[in-house]
Length: 396
Ligand SMILES: *Cc1c(COP(=O)(O)O)cnc(C)c1O
Image 1 (cartoon, rainbow, N blue to C red):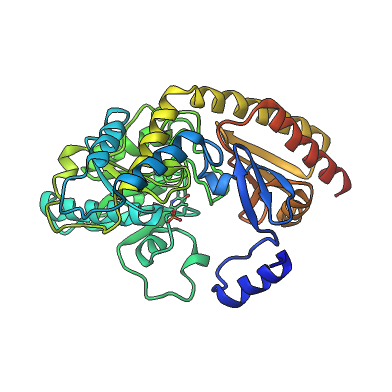
Image 2 (image 1 turned 180 degrees about the vertical axis):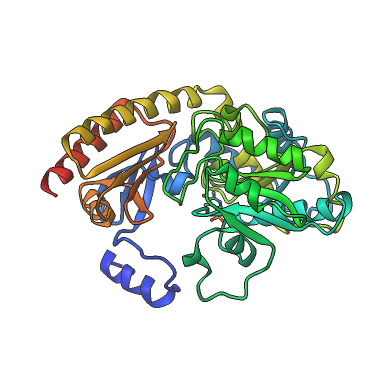
């Protein structure tokens, strides 16, 4: 079938939940992907912060292939060897003691919310169930994670939503303190807001949130679905803040494209879950674990984090150069390779133009260009993308 026919079949058979760009990507290799007409693109979106090791990374591909030939799925009513290895890798490289595996970011956050409520039910005095989240946040699309998401546009039309969430402005410690009530059991936030426009809080904000949680005896939950797995230049974004959460969620880059999510916690908190508390048929699936182990081992051994920091700094420096040339660029925000370029105009048109010129990126919040490329990009990749942006902005 021709590309046009495929796109019309896509519109005929698939529910209309995404505003899709008019291309079909059929192959990938490292930082590059190709469409159904053979056109090449440099991918600075990476499936939205998913393919952090690049497309079709050999070690991940081989791990999935080898596992597929041996055993692909058994029930979680048995012990699963690659799950043990993957959990150990996560525990040994984070604050956490225990891991629950699932298949996506929303599911990881659902598990985190359930654990926080269960812990509060068993171990906190009074009737505490409320979780404070941030305005402009994003935690997923299931009913409960939509309710946790502090953006009305995601709520509209789906009411009544599950109760028990309260929203405060991000990076405002006084508003947060004022919102804590006798019903509050936890605070949940992204260390850097992703969908909300790559918003980085003030240096001491996360440490002050931690202190507030300790004073009030409530839990701190970090949604690191986007910031985790090296994206910000550290394995997890919380590392830079000098504090640790009680619960953390991961997904996106965890399987480099194989669906995989995880919810991690300290022993004290994790012990509120017992057999029957929570479950997932596919969570911790053997293929997902094979992919996850390959991702973790590569990320820890291959200088990926160093490259992320180095290329992130270089990319921001080149973007600052564009900013001095084009006043339409209002602000550049980023850490590692999680970078937002806020414009004083809508960004959708630029995304379309870039696509035509062979660059994949996206726009969030209407006016923030978002770059979350594979962490393995080179300086030449950055230069190519800067050249394309320069051409587009010049003609704007
Ligand atoms: C993408 C994202 C989610 C949702 O993940 P899904 O895998 O799409 O369910 C949740 N939280 C954050 C911070 C995200 O970026």
